[in-house]
Length: 286
Image (tube, rainbow, N blue to C red; front, side, top):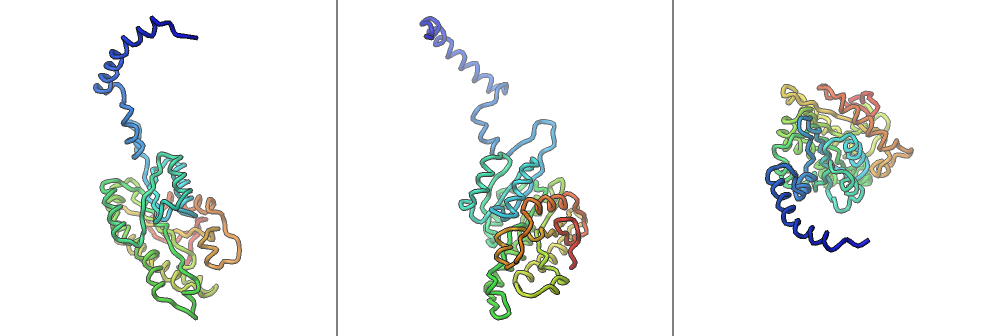
């Protein structure tokens, strides 16, 4: 059906007035500017009078346990800062961020001090309720057996698994202290337990690095307890991930979803005792 010529002409005469009225409404704050929508997407905000969503920063969120942590925290409505060494190669993480406005992806190689400092500077003044150290590296099995101990590999494993969580905790300490929950969590391993060495040897560097980060976090807990910080040392269990397959573990692990559900429950119930807690809530012996 064609519009009568008189109606079209009348609309054209009114168009300038309508545009001017809309512009005035934006200026007076009566109508939000459409251009402001992009800025809102960059940093989710709460409605006036409501409590802001808590924030979690996750390292090593490109796959496995880290990716599942990002998924589950995003589903709970948290603001998720998901970091990865190579976000361009993390298709599933980028897809999650595209689907959910409360997920942002950052580049972070935890072995790179300059990148740690740069990310901390970017988020200066931003409260982070849970600083979650998930990034880790097993190291090549053949380079950490008694027959062949490659000490250059040892240094790299220590840099990722032990040094980085302490350095990142130091860099983001002000963010954690400014938050409501004040939690720092490291994902450790049952292989870090001295008692568990009765089951077998091997993986020298990985075991030592995880035992080292346990001590680093326990020392951090002692030093920051009076400031209200809770430090978690959490073991995810034998999870069906690429790391588990590379470790030579013969059986099938539990799913990342099941493990992370338990890990998050433990984070929610975190105390200031800094014990090693398995995904199912049981304690891992030192």
